[in-house]
Figure (cartoon, rainbow, N blue to C red):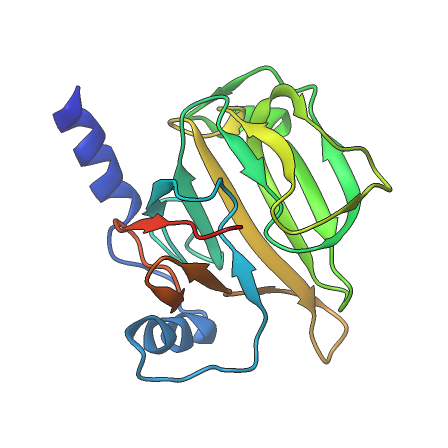
Length: 199
């Protein structure tokens, strides 16, 4: 079982195949070659002093080829916390199926939170009836908003997290994000475990 999980994790984080120009920028930010001290620093979307492994990172081969998104391995029922203050603009929690087949995509439960600057954060693969907020609710950073699950297109229970906003052309664009971790502010990397310092 452990060997199978390790192979699955390695598959998830294998070399990126994206030609998106943002991919190169993300790699430089993750390595600290390119410095960023102006973007918003997000809280990790789980409880204080707990750790989770990033099993798939920005532009990873499996299902993030063109996505600046992160997958945190989590057991079903793990508390999901808001990574930033905002207003809930979407809630889906009636999905009750999941698996490694694209036919399960419509069943992916999710919450989308809009922030004061117009950007949005999405939290996916939530537990059936696992949302603790409704559309229109205000949420604060660190507030428990849902429980993790395995709904939608997914091989194992995890939280899929991404942020996007309008670019200068008025199109939605995904944004790689910095997080506050126990070891400082980081652009997260796959196959690494990060401990939350949410207070």
